[in-house]
Length: 451
Image (cartoon, rainbow, N blue to C red; front, side):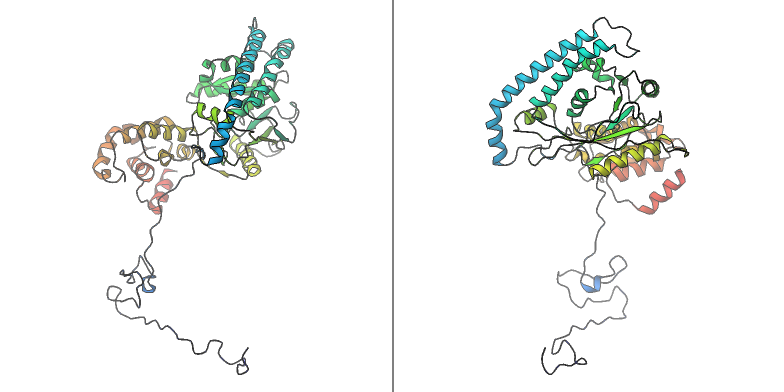
């Protein structure tokens, strides 16, 4: 410090100062003291910092997390191309091993099912022992896909303690792994029964089929879950409550089928660490995903059994609350976000892809939230999007908004009921499909009047 400075001396001496003069003129006549960008930045209500030369700002449009996006759709980098070329002979051997194991497992399953007619009761023990051949074949199938070893953490709880197991769903690998590890009874879509080889094998698991769009089918599935969970002679039940595969970077909304019976549940998390190849089965074809798995030196997979989540004692807890606690436990263990997406969002994205939209993921609306708040079913939303895209909207989705809105009211007569007033259609299309600007005050007023 200089010798002539004291505690009372100014710290900044001989430094030029900038003087800002604030005029008392109206905002329209006020002149900015400086303008670095050669633009009019006069003070107004929308830009109170204009007198400092700051530009006005716009609130960005709504963005949506895409829980179905595979981040390695393309083959990038010299390392990946060299690895694929080197692994092509290995991939051929793996493909032969896969086909051989699938054939042997299929034959063993057919033998185990032959002559078994009483499928409402647990499978006899000698048939279960024969199914061990198929279970060993499934482990060899995992080996052929590059899962030479699988890291496990924790242990499965005894079936008497936790008759129901739930897991996040990232790929088709988890059902194969759990088939080998637990040989559980699963809940699957009715469409799986017609799949070659796979349909026969899951029938041996005493599968519970469900049609997600049929109320009676869902009710029957819940009754079957309750019946089989209450009997220790049946295997434990395995459910993927998300209802579809995701990329593992988010936990989407849970279906309630596993939680309505009110039994203790053991959550399991499955994680696929990777650097170059995302193994999630999202917006990628099955053939391409299998090819990429076959052409990897090794694919990493980690499975962790979490503590059992039991219904609270002396506290009345419904299925929604139990599902929320389980979902939170899984999301916390994975360190990922929770969203209100559902299988309906995947249907909306698929519909947008059919119409050759540039960014189909923009049409996802977190369908579970829409269903609960707006009472709009998935099938209605898909039909709504189909009719909207058939209008061939422009890239901004705003040019024909007002001219088409009256036509929208006529093609959606089912939404003119008290549960779906006309403003709801307008808000729904404006906020999600037309991607226009949305005032939060109006949304709050409308949702408040709805509830």
